Length: 140
Image (cartoon, rainbow, N blue to C red; front, side, top):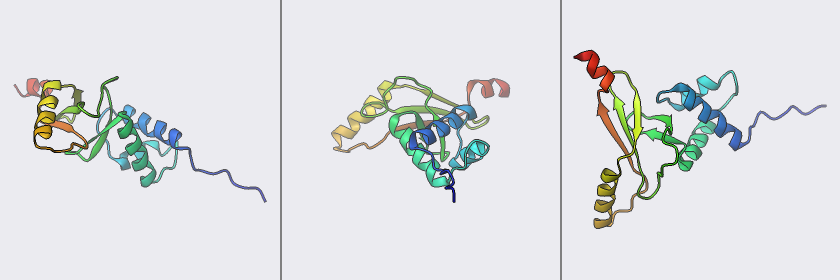
């Protein structure tokens, strides 16, 4: 009797698949959308995708958008997300585009408040909701 090859993939391979799906989507996606996108390449359980997303977030390769309950690939190469660093996102309510950028003064002000208040920050994600320039121009 021959043993079937295991469908289980190493964590690093799972992370690469999930990250590729995030990059290819070009927009915020849920874990279940990632599973759908990868259906032809891999059979991944929701828990597997969530664990991969946790690792990608911890490494700074991905972000969770709290207000959308969705995930995006990090598009700011080389910036720091721990300590004084934070991801800042502008999310368009009309077209759904997400722009990631750095705003050190805002992050520094929030970190200073936390220090004065003896508040230990575990994570910091800033989200701006509104209308992007392209949608604003179309509305004009």
